[in-house]
Length: 96
Image 1 (cartoon, one colour):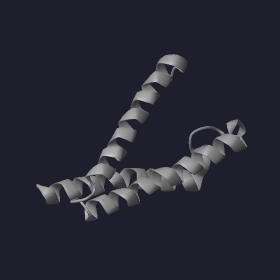
Image 2 (cartoon, helix red, strand yellow):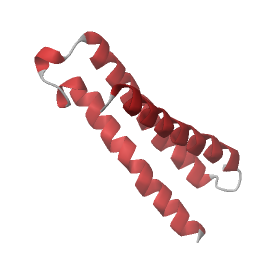
Image 3 (cartoon, helix red, strand yellow):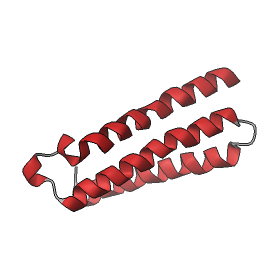
Image 4 (tube, helix red, strand yellow):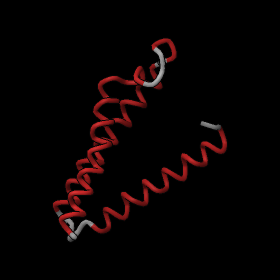
């Protein structure tokens, strides 16, 4: 059971690593046309791309230190859940 949890965590953590790398390289032009990209949008997207990539390395640490990583994992999962709630709130306020 422990090994399957570790493998699942690494597979799931690879998603933000790959997407973060792609966003870091391509910037905001991957989502909108060149004429709609401004410096603030591109700056924030690349900043958050590195932030998301950091989640992979934090997860790798948790997988290697599973016995003591409980509080860190609780903080990570709580932050992700609250971020999801914030996105839902934003959708209700502003729309998609």
